[in-house]
Amino acid sequence: MSGDTIAAQIEIGKYSQEQQESFDYQSLEKILNKYKGKEGVIIPILQEIQEVYGYLPKEILVRTSKKTRIPISQLYGVATFYAQFHLKKRGRHLIRICDGTACHVSGSPKIVQAIENALEIEAGGSSPDYKYTLEIVYCVGSCGLAPVAVVGDQVYAQTKPESFVRTLKKLE
Image 1 (cartoon, rainbow, N blue to C red):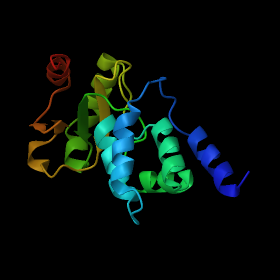
Image 2 (tube, rainbow, N blue to C red):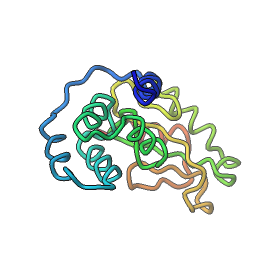
Image 3 (cartoon, helix red, strand yellow):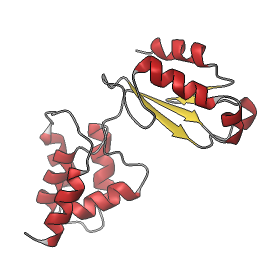
Image 4 (cartoon, rainbow, N blue to C red):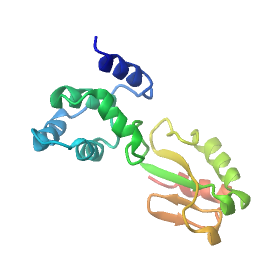
């Protein structure tokens, strides 16, 4: 077993404990055929894979490695280096709570706690039904509106824990 293979197995072992899913491999084949024989295409391949699947599933990365002969450790290295890539399945609604200084002192920790309790979700994770993903960010550039939350592209200003949780529960 090569050192690269061993390193890849160790890294993949650290992957999130995903639910077993079945994937449409035809979409992957189209992406890989588009870049076949081209150099320097790891980032666009990963971007397109994430666009199709919503994240970078372990099985898809393994198959990509085999088909392209790009070492899995290299794919994983790029995927973990850039913040745009996600190795865990994410919810339909991405909730970002600002915890910059202004938001923190205005109550963002209470908002996070209310969401975690009401939606069975931990910061940095997704709800069991993958309806929500909760992320903590450290500035959204709206300090005068603190505390601020962003859901998708919608900004919520001067957020109160209870009313914000009610708003989230209304999302489909």
